[in-house]
Image (cartoon, rainbow, N blue to C red; front, side):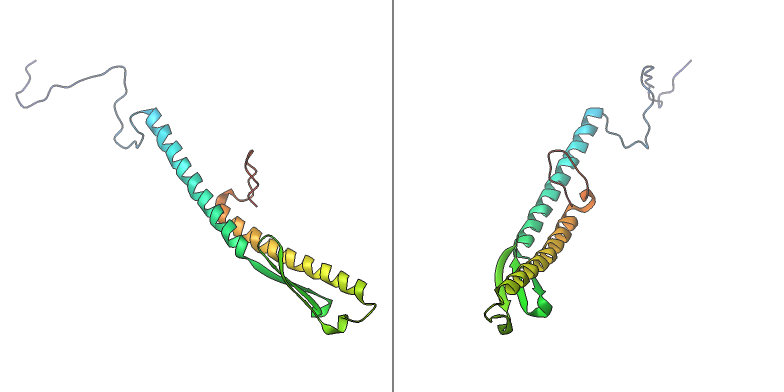
Amino acid sequence: MVASANAAPQRFRFCDPPPNPLSRRPSSPYLGRMKDLTQLMQQAQAMQQKLQDAQAKMAETAADGSSGGGLVSVSLKGPGEITAIKIDDSLLTPGEGDILADLIVAAHADAKRKLDEQNNALMREAAGPMAGMNIPGMPKLF
């Protein structure tokens, strides 16, 4: 058999299958795992940043609650800090102390519920697809 001058010599490796030109796999399985790990770490860092941003927004979130048909209102900020209480003058009569105390507690509970709903929505938005997952060692992501 005579080889032509233009033909390149062919190399055959019997132990390896021929490479698939359509395959996107890296040449080394180790490099593929490292790329996956790097991508996972980048996603974790992005999620951590989103959660920190959500916590900063939560600190500035405010909600108002009321009771007694608006006779008492309470304003909350952040994790539940009371920023204002408004009491109608009609409740400031002697003997109305118990009613007033109950209305303040009810207004606070209403404002706290609203504040918690807003904060939970912020955290769900920040957690994205991880929301509702219970990962050991991490806080539950709403």
